[in-house]
Image 1 (cartoon, helix red, strand yellow):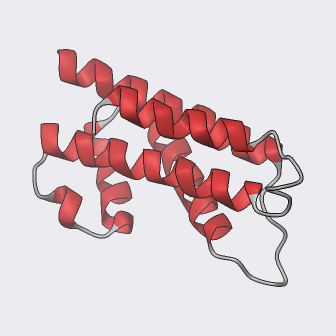
Image 2 (image 1 turned 90 degrees about the horizontal axis):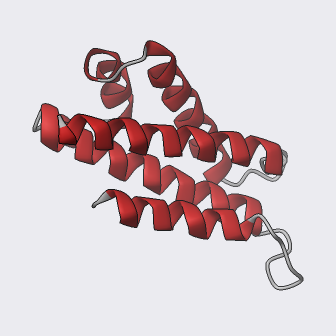
Length: 124
């Protein structure tokens, strides 16, 4: 999936952060799901460019490998943190609150940074 399609996933997630009566209660998890999909697709793009076959591994294994293929290290840590938070947010548990808008904004910013970094790698 090219970077413009990944950005459109994030744009759709961003639009969900403006809740209306029709999306009450659903928008945090919907935005989390779209953002997680954007991160996963961006990682698939990275693996296809740099280490074909890694995209078939578990996400935990992909995140462990990420530090060897993506710089700065700070970005790999933020991507791992974001994916874990988004994954937790996508699974509804009655005793947990959905993510806040501030958390979602931070995770979306990380997803944008990841897409930018992978786009730079593909042009080198």
